[in-house]
Amino acid sequence: MSDFDGLTWSQAEQRAAQGDAACMRELGEQLADRHAEAVRQVRECERQLAHVVRVLALTPGRDSLGHLLQLLDEKRPSTGSRPLLPFVASLLAEHHQVADLAATVFERRAQDHLDELRDCLFHELVLRGVETDAFPALRSWVIVRPGWHALAWLPVHRRGLESGADFPTRSINGSSYGVPSQLPVEGRVDPPTPRKSERFALRDMATTDVHESIVAAVQAGEWGDHGAWVFLLDEAVPPERMPALLPTLPMQCVDGLGPTDRFEIAVRPLDAIWRLLFDTASMGGMFDSGVHGAYGRLWAWRSIAGLSGAPAGASAGEVEHRARQSTWFHFEADTDWFHGDIDSDYGIAALSPDRRRIAVLAATDTD
Image 1 (cartoon, rainbow, N blue to C red):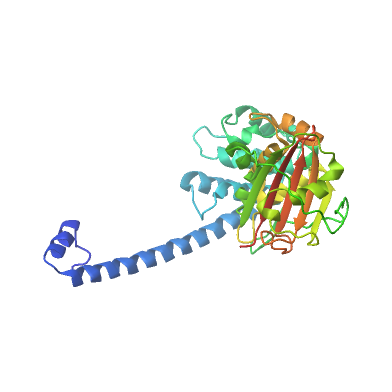
Image 2: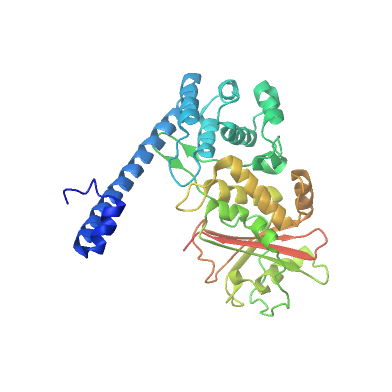
């Protein structure tokens, strides 16, 4: 059609009214082709833009930092489905001197749009053990940062349970990371087989808010599937009974588990559970890069809060106190729900301090 570029909505409607359906089909085909090409060009531009941002972020020195900040502030680029600034913050924390970051990134200008970058970078540095109080710009950021931001809930200093956080290794041309979810040898309390197949008359008591809290880290990491359950018991259950009790609970993740099928479980310290949740959220599943350190920290804490039964609105200190009083378990099972692939399945169970509440999170990254 020679008049394609000048065709207006009214002309299109007129031709349709005249019964020129062939013309409309040809127009649709050409529009579809143009759209496909435009999408291809946009994706290619996003890919190249992401590479340029990555190179700038991985190039040490205040000069590269200055140009990167100018690009991010003035153009506010988008390079994919995940937000860009948390990723950039993670790269900066990995590859730049803290003094350079404090002197450039945290030199806040009133009209810039980089507070999200600063917030994420601050928590990336905290997780890496940086003594933020030693840098005036970082110390003052806690005072001037937006108090409404979700990350403002997090502790401004690294807590003991966070000291073993894992991070990916990135270069200009690639990345190396993974979520080590395999059951450890230490702490194993596997129940004897054959196990009793009796099921308890319990109901999942998780409210919508509690369920969303428990699965926060897995959802953030976009794993393949997940489940969460909370059971309230009439009487206290000692921790040593948990290995026999868990496989009998009415949960999809253990449906079909026979008395001799594999069910392995270990008592785990809180820091190991937090690290597993942090890895899940921050580094993501097989086909995802996760939400990176700052938001991975937030969602790991959120899952710990839900699993431990911390009250709504609890501070990080209150969540940690309750979580440390709970007993934590890491388990795996041979069921249809779990797939048994390495580093792709895990279950977490938390027994409350009064021994009358059991919260469970199950995650799988296999379709």
